[in-house]
Image (tube, rainbow, N blue to C red; front, top):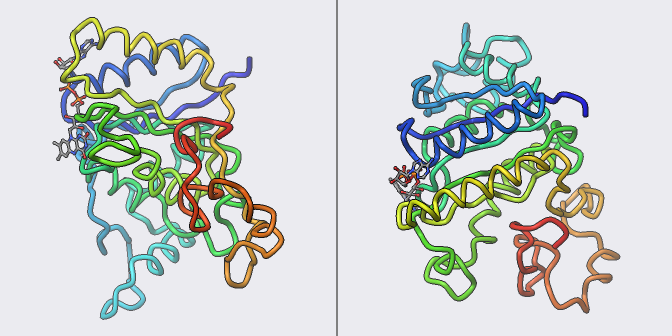
Length: 271
Ligand SMILES: Cc1cc2nc3c(=O)[nH]c(=O)nc-3n(C[C@H](O)[C@H](O)[C@H](O)COP(=O)(O)OP(=O)(O)OC[C@H]3O[C@@H](n4cnc5c(N)ncnc54)[C@H](O)[C@@H]3O)c2cc1C
């Protein structure tokens, strides 16, 4: 099998954490498969999380009405982004597969990882008005979320106190990863390792090791192809709506057409 390049974006403060063990397992298994694995250890790098004017070298075009999106787009075109952003973009350009390894914070990612998304996925580099979703910049790359929770699985269910995990994942998997074109692999969720026994924690890591063996052959999650939407108003085309009018579930968690969202669609391929 052809050797592949993997980038792991790792966001945990402690090398003794369960999250670090999950990251180490991925480095070991994928390296043993002949992959080149690079790790961006965000806390160790003291990665800057805030998107600010300091992310741009040289002149700011409209300093009085600073617009981060426009100014970083221009800076990317003119190779004037700060060195830390440029380095991460180079790693991302090289990678065939990106694994984001983190503990869930507030139903989302830790701020330092959100900062990586905000700053590294610059307009022009990661998306544009013409290049988005299934026609996005990174359609030849795969990406996945691998994360730990404090909550039990039952709490993140359609009848659970936190609600359906498929809904929680939608902004991250659709709004960031798929938006930039990535083929999104099913997430790896380590449910509540802090509440589990050492044996259960070990078996969670063994399960992850087993999954990693076949990870690069996995089919991605399903999203609606961009050409199902009208290019002017970005609404589902009438014929697509008609085709799904009598179906029990909506097309995706977000574009649900007023129906119940399709079960497991953000958790399992083929749903
Ligand atoms: C700001 C904030 C917001 C949060 N928001 C949410 C939220 O919205 N939803 C939610 O569910 N949770 C939330 N949490 C909880 C958080 O997600 C969990 O605390 C975290 O995911 C646990 O993962 P960890 O890697 O830090 O676990 P750790 O505490 O590091 O690990 C658990 C145990 O595993 C042990 N361990 C480490 N390596 C191994 C190994 N190789 N084999 C066996 N055992 C090992 C560790 O020693 C430890 O005893 C939040 C926490 C914070 C701080």
